Amino acid sequence: MDRIGKVDNCSARSRGSTSNMKFLTTNFLKCSVKGCDNSNLNFPLHYVGANCQLEQDESIEFNPEFLLRIIDRLEWPAVVSVAADLGNNDLPPNKPEFDENLTEEDMVILRDLHTLLIQTNITEGQMQCKNCEHIYYIKNSIPNLLLPPHLA
Amino acid sequence: MVQVHLNFRLAELESLADLHGIDVDFSGYSVDSPFMVVTLKNDKDASDWIKRSVLTRAIYEYWGEGTDYESLHKSIQSLPELEAYKSANDQKSFKFEFEKYGGNARQDTSARVSTIESFKYLDLKGPIRMKNPDEVFTVIEEYKAISDNVGGECPVKLYFGRQVQLSDRATGAVEKYDLKKRPYKGTTSFEAELSLASANIAQVKPGSIMYDPFVGTGSFLVAGGHYGALVLGSDIDGRMIRGKGQQTIGANFKHYKEAIQYLDVVTMDFTHNAIRDTLAIDTILCDPPYGIRESIKVLGAKDPEKFIGKEDVEINGQKAYLLRDYIPTKKPYSLDSLLDDLLDYASRRLPVNGRLAFWMPTANDENIATIIPLNSKLELKYNCVQDFNKWSRRLLVYINRGPDFNGPSNSGLDRTSNFRDRYFSGFN
Image (cartoon, rainbow over all chains, first blue to last red; front, side):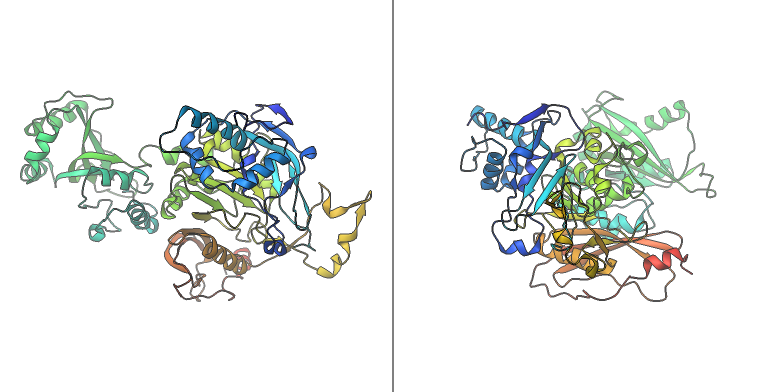
């Protein structure tokens, strides 16, 4: 539990690059092929771990209040599965819950989640729909969800 | 209040009052006047209401008014609440300020001091502090300009009050976000003042999620982030999103020290949306492509026959369309269809009472009335026009009222498709 934030193949640290796809964003993106909306396999996308480059951006400050709002909106099973895609198998199966008064232990978990969700950037990589198997690319830290004409 | 963007000012004030659940009687509002007198429950309501405002300057506790200092003093001294106001303030540190409206007459310091001394009857016993006083007492001097360029020399109207809250404008938001000082911007970047006002009229809330489906260089993300929303953008044009080197949308957020508000931007066709349906989007605020700088495009082949079988093309044994550098083809789309899609998306994705706000261009000289896109689940709340010479643009603001609303709809109708042609022919 205390190493939630770690992702194994993190290549660079704190380059502070100015554009970045946050790990958090993997929790928002489904396949853009309309036909896949009828499948429950279109979210989350599968991240091809071997082809993903990660980077830590430590310039964004830790803000527990902000993070709690984000956690509220997460689909937790997708966080777990994408983290596993990227080499982190240490996440708890259920979404951590927090009381109004945060304990020291809560803060440790929140800091780890901050490291994972906010500070971990995917700079290059491939995302694949588990339904139609279309491959999308993350290029220069920007995910590209455009489609070829036969899928549009 | 400020006497600019008058078509937006009341919408901003109403939206901010509604956002904070403050009951405001707008019967004292006049589009021609920079002043409005209003009764509110307490300082907190006044402060909440005006703190975010971009089109006002400040809100004061009203102590009196007059056409000159003599009548101002009389007015203050006859105020029923004066004794209560005096005892509430008599031990506090304070200073006096003079706000001039419509004039630039200079008064020397000694004249100012004697003016301040004329308020002696207020019995302010606290220390005078020029920096961070407990209270700021303000004299607002309204001048009548002699001509457009020459301000008046003698005030025609005076107001006196205790400052309760300076607006976002008065504390520097418009300057802070001035495009001239923004690290990453482009030809389509939206000016600071009206993008902030748009975010207020759209009721962007702290901690909520705001989405801009035509994000460009991220002007509206900046405005939404300033008001505390977590902001997410997409654009079919990856070049805008990518920025230039260190100049990116993310870099702007770091520059403003609001990086935490910025979620991400993705390259995506809004009409082939990849945001999961279960992600709650609280507000949509955007400036859709008008089709002027470049035509409106969505994914798909303009000439489908040419693309028959193209999905089987392979390069070095790999499907071409699955390669990293594959560039999908795009086809033209009409502004009407795009706006229909936008309204439909908002009606499906916003919570009930959530707001969609976007900008739409119209030609001014057409004899045909401008047709505003409508969706049966959305209530058109505001239609605020900004006039240019031969064309105008308007901020359209809709409230999602849900499936039972049954409002009028004109989805699928040809409404604005000739705007681009008319723009290029000079609206003649």
